[in-house]
Length: 214
Ligand SMILES: CC(C)(COP(=O)(O)OP(=O)(O)OC[C@H]1O[C@@H](n2cnc3c(N)ncnc32)[C@H](O)[C@@H]1OP(=O)(O)O)[C@@H](O)C(=O)NCCC(=O)NCCS
Image (cartoon, rainbow, N blue to C red; front, top):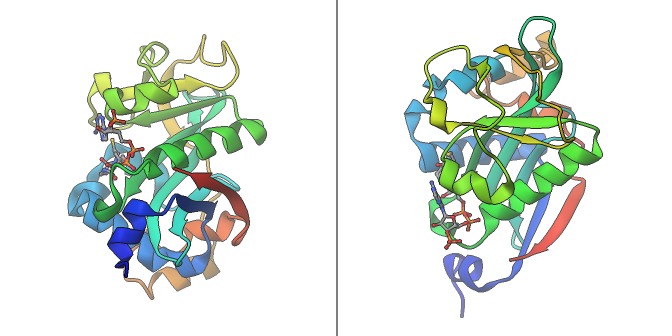
């Protein structure tokens, strides 16, 4: 007989799907478990607060049994005043009980593929370079760019989906995503958090993005 944890460790099948509104509470609980309460103080949060994720780019990892075990979202940003748009990725998190099983990588691969398919030209993030390097993220193209708040420069990384997309990029990143609507904000209060519940409204509800053999 298998417990759920054993299933995560031994079952090869994890579904990467678009997040839907019913996933929000479980996603927020997972983020609290994986990253702790300081996660809301990050500079990236300034670019996410009050905005929806980029269309079709809020993904979750779900076990065959239905448990949410991973999350990643990407956000529309502008690179400097009047500059081109790009995506900011984060947070990426995997449930601590399911770490090291390839779920984070599966989410990253799916997010990058989907972003490219949707016509985006570059993805930026603030994170651990040794982890994100495996997906092609480097500091190479972020030297002239900056986050709107404190961050460590060697953790400010980018991946071009279109070669050369960041060649002339410079300036401070600005939020460029669709703003949360009034009716959506109302539903936020049910969760008691300003950035919760609404993000998933922008996604294609429940559309399977891919089944991943880990
Ligand atoms: C980082 C995180 C998303 C990785 O997810 P995961 O499903 O455990 O990762 P995967 O199974 O796809 O990859 C595991 C590999 O990544 C490596 N890895 C994990 N976190 C790492 C980190 N912070 N820096 C460098 N390598 C890391 C592991 O050592 C392992 O290496 P191996 O393949 O050589 O054995 C997950 O550990 C997590 O949620 N951490 C807490 C939240 C967080 O830090 N988010 C990212 C912000 S930078």
